[in-house]
Length: 327
Picture 1 (cartoon, one colour):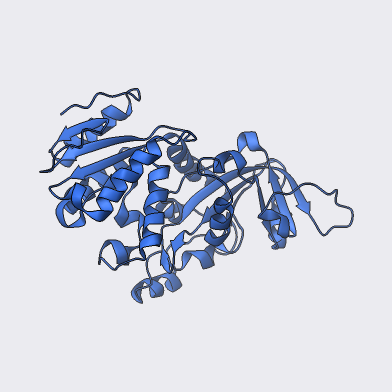
Picture 2 (cartoon, rainbow, N blue to C red; picture 1 turned 120 degrees about the horizontal axis):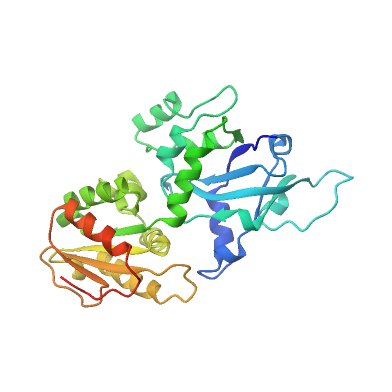
């Protein structure tokens, strides 16, 4: 019997409520290895041994971020909680309130840090009458109306979808890169280092490094047009990005350490480095572009072209954690 791969959606509000109940660093340990829905499709499609891929569409206020792969759940059991003959099992929240629930094998399931799954999602082909999310007229109209590139995705993801045979390969590759690869948080002043940030993000991404870069992870209208986002919401987005990262790369221009947001990012990364519950260490690198070193970085690089900086960063990522600062 071939393994079915199902794509399901979990609202960002549900994830935020669930995360709020657990201390930082314990989410992975206490994650609910289950998924619930009132859609009968879940009961009809999900069988023991199948895989459920959980996606969400993160947002802060009405600003929507790229879709993120949240979890890969390896199904152990499918439960209809309203069936009179069903054996009652302990179902963790937030799935407990739904009629149909799949319980997952913890050993073979995995939760992922915040990521940008947009390109992978659009590349997939599904079984059934709507085989692709590409070239959707509704989504194109929303983009034309200025509602953002990702505004139409939640509607597409509401229906449980089955991947066409072989399509899981792309999701497996993306998930592996997110789980095992490096995640770089790019910190820089928009007014002083944007061109280099763009090139560096592109070079690192081309080498399989996930980049938490504001113009990919913060909504377009905020990143490109400078529209002010509520301070609490923006700081929450930046903090989440730093927590997911294994490296912070600071492009240190003349006013980097005196600007409120970049100074906040550097300080927040320093605090996160001391978080005893981190699964992987966080390191900080400085690229000196007219500013002075803080003398607190794991790695200090002199100004250079994006290709050279990317090569130096990739080499540093392959070394053990304790790196001497060096110019």
